[in-house]
Length: 271
Image (cartoon, rainbow, N blue to C red; front, side, top):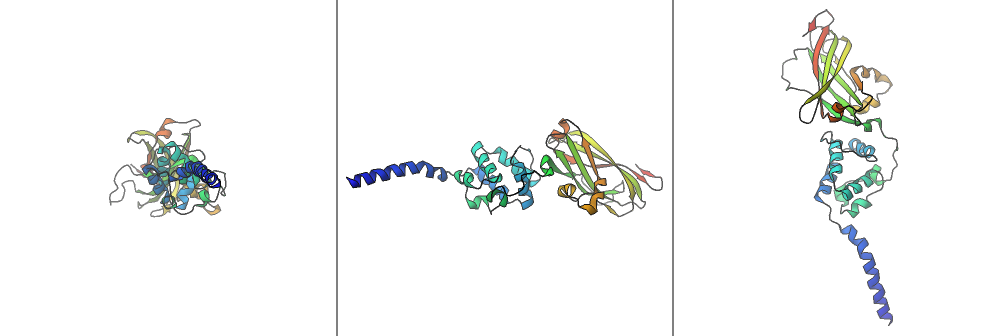
């Protein structure tokens, strides 16, 4: 009789345990595996962008920068897979990912933000409000010096996710023989389909000697954390505040640059 009671108890116990165990035998979907692979390849700075984004996630619809690509992939996941990834990113550990069939090999090395609880500051970075875009040349650049005499070294644009603001920063060099006193830049806003949605104008004045780099912030982090010794870099940035959401900003996928005019210290100009 005792043996019967024991075996009955054992069967009931196993039956009760099976549903709980079965949920961890779930096979990870190919989409989840691919998304975790993308996230696994992110550097710490890019991963931190995901952590800032995760509490209020929105699909950026972009493939660059790398964290925007990861955000887009996460938002394309099926509901339970997406929730599991966001659970990890918001500091609740890997349990939800394990339940979806993900393994530590798929997830990658331990990340403090996801694996050690919400130890980081819960105050979002100012950068989390923006989509980051590198400035793009509208044409292929040749080997000859630019006709304007202004060589653009690089730059970036920050487009507010709510469409209310754009910030553009640029670095350049005057390669003409004469010092320049003003450079007129335009920044066309380009849609995913290549349509020009509008432009932002910027007239940078000063004294720009030949072959001297006139640098703005090196990257978006430097824009928000410039340090006391480099606040002059903001002279190379222009801000467009719309007050309300503007469709051109919401639909912008690329920001190009053009040199529209140059004034020189000897009174000449281009074009």
